[in-house]
Length: 209
Image (cartoon, rainbow, N blue to C red; front, side, top):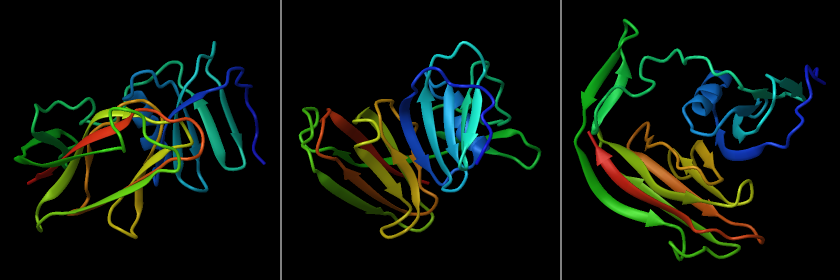
């Protein structure tokens, strides 16, 4: 099922995998990430792979609900908040006039979480999880200071709460953007497989107004 428009001649490197995301946001995430020039969007499962590939022309293919797009000539993103026009500790929101609006936030440091043995390599078959809850009318912000996992084998998954919706499934070795909670809770889970190990991650956790 699906039609191949052109053949991708190089094997892509998966930089990260994000779950529960639409095709437009998938493309926008790639455009905002240094080194990303392709995406693999799975419409059935709403997953987005951010890719680093080196094609000679624009190439696109689709098969079984999954669509690979090589973004050789990137177009501007139709998002007033990208790139972020706000200064540090200011959050950008889009007004009803489709204009960027900066909201001043007050961030309070909570703690730093990291993979086992960080900054040394984490072990095989590792499993760690963290749960965070702040007061009503507050949000949580995850600020990544290091990120280096085995691509597509070791994962850091972020949920809106324990047993809740998976927001992000992160893998690879690029430093993710700040992650804001949609409410006042986060549940984070780190898993590794049996093969290679890397230096892992470090995240500063804040609560903010």
